Length: 94
Length: 349
Image (cartoon, rainbow over the protein chains, first blue to last red):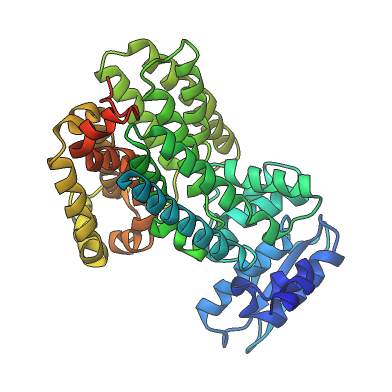
């Protein structure tokens, strides 16, 4: 177990940490975006009405943490939608 | 022989507590609770941007990150990450055992009693539930505690130098820049210094704390439109709220806290010299708790909810500050033996 823990690297360990591992796919997606998007680009987190409010809040906090220093804007999505997208600089969504 | 057994036992407790707290902190990267929503979020924002204003930008509506909270802990996390060359939540968790070791050393230094009692005070600190809770590993209280204990060590010094109140004031300023409870400590410490006639020390320590700690952050956040504490407001004043806070504390914590409170009261009751020597500390702890309770009168959120989620973290500071007095009180009945052994257990002036 120790070998797996140390072999995972900082990224793997972070994604498996209790605070982020609960929504692993979402956290991995947000972490990937944090690595790829320029730091000046903000993010739009769309969460549909079928997603429970506590889950929505949890995802918002995780997205804010992983994408910092970017601002994460929460918008209403469709159905059970959970998606992250960049907000280009100068767009009205900022 | 008995003394050796006591020293060995206290050392064993100290080591067990420190190893346990360190393993709990390092078994996973920082990621839980307020670390993710507040402290770590701000630290990553600061690390990623290098701009202090980024603390406000990540949560512009102030809905979950408490932008009004003082910035020293996120600055320290971001600074450590910069030194490491990357923001690694596991490596940053090493700050916890480092701060815990400092807090234990300060508790040891503050305790004026024979060696076993000093070790026992340090062991009690590392065994406090706060440090045995993995979820609190990335929280700001450990840094706050170290700064406050260091300031207390200086203020309690029997032979202060002209430099002492300046250093204490600087530490209290840093405490105020760590958490709002640091400002409460600053107020209480200044008032107590005035009460015991140390007017110059009060002016220096209080003035430095105000000018270098409270004022700069208040001005900076005001300049960014962040004016006050999100959970408290003058308009929310309610006289019954502190009483509801006490009742809520009774419901959530009294059963588990009662044996410890009773034990502490009995130990102090049987130690008149310690009570006399430690009167300012006991008064300060009481005043600190009273002020915290009074702030509940201005709570905007449900007091019961607030107490349930914060009482153990709010209790950390006064409990840790009182540990040396409790260790001294426990050692008081044996003081004559200790003096005979030449261990420097004389009563504090």
